[in-house]
Length: 248
Ligand code: NAD
Image 1 (cartoon, helix red, strand yellow):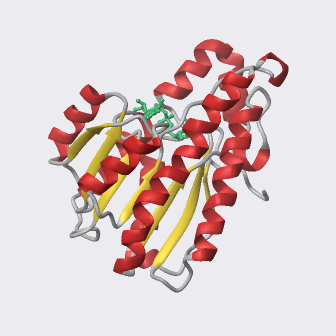
Image 2: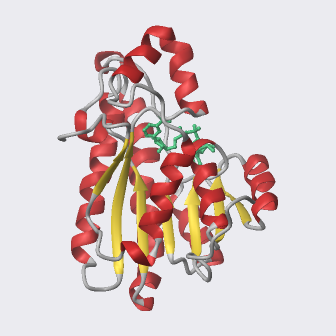
């Protein structure tokens, strides 16, 4: 592991969707900074390979299964840091979507955050320390053409996180959101395959930076919010989006 630091030494972290994409970069960064990391993912083979690399633990988990989530957190916790990263998008204009699509997108992107927080927060309250970091999207602040339900779910994540921050102020617990813009991951590549070069161009030109972001840039923001240095930052939405959400 390159650039090993120890500012998260002694901390334990639970990262959902940590096997690939942004989640994998978060896992690597938290581990490099000294945390013990549990990777919770549907893709157990990829999670196990990464767990071996970082000397962490892999758990096969579907975040939409509330009972499974509670059992995994009880079995491997308590946790100082919870990163809700698992998420899926679906590109379709709203009138082309079905109630099944809405339920699936809300279950993965929003309700899973309720389930993990419900399971992990009591131990943080008892310990007087906690870092809740939820990966939403700039779509949750700006809306999304072809992603109305996804944007609504991510907007829900923002409102939920701010509410948890309000309920836990003064208890050593912070709750913050990271709102990525277009980040170069398998999820984004899938969308680009569907939408073609025009979509890629639209995405990059929507940022002030004029490019896609990297998973490592999101992970660096997570590591900062997880640190003791970030103890006076709570209820915030931090765009890691090349300025896409500037002014939102
Ligand atoms: P990805 O598809 O590359 O990786 C997602 C990971 O989550 C995978 O390892 C997958 O196996 C896991 N996962 C999916 N459904 C799951 C479930 N039900 N239970 C457990 N694990 C599950 O995605 P990504 O691009 O790395 O996105 C990570 C997060 O960042 C998501 O919440 C996404 O909405 C958000 N985001 C991504 C972008 C982007 O441009 N990539 C932009 C804004 C927000």
